[in-house]
Length: 269
Ligand code: DGL
Image (cartoon, rainbow, N blue to C red; front, side, top):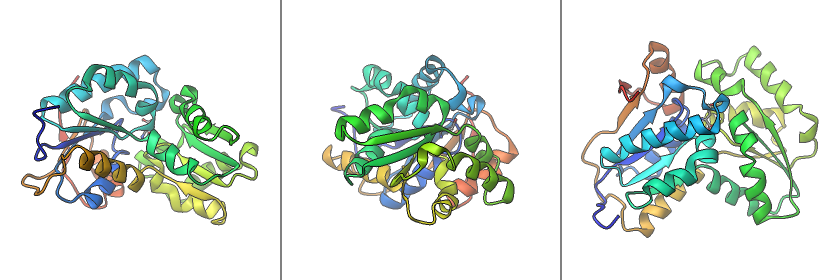
């Protein structure tokens, strides 16, 4: 870390283009930073993969981002943050700063002293039990209800949002009996900010919704600032790579990133 310079880029990755919701928030919070985004579209969705498979993908992608000279790597995927973050630190902590999307979300929710919260996530994230464990560590008496919602990420990735069918799927999930009387719902997948308004509407705005966009961007800013690594001036454009390219990914990126970007196919596998 000693030779790291503020002008180096921030690496950020997800299973696909869902992490662009986080990238978007980082660009807004830190307009001087240069991003290198990697979407592992060849292996999407991560939520259905084994923890070992996800760890292997994350190690390879992090190595690629470090080879591009990244000063920080943002693991912009809850499934990856849940099962691979410790391994990434073990291998690469000397080479760059790391940020995951679970810790900032847990900290923001635990700060509010709720008595019952819920979270929705992929199967891999729910299976890992990381949200339950970390929320209980900060707030031992908190009641935590979880639900795996595996149809949501592929549905959103297809651009299938804000229509009758997507709302029917969402309503079926959110009517989960365990979510009775929750005060807050954590969107523990980086795809879900795209359907945040539908979720707020389902709960008639009576349940506080947390997602990992600006909360994570603030954590990135805090960590870079703490390490004197905030870039004073952006000199190069952001770069966006995917491990498998289809036209539909290119079209859907606009949903996630709010402006059109060009995805480059990078053959990592
Ligand atoms: N965006 C990923 C997450 O936050 C989920 C999508 C997937 O299953 O690949 O967990």
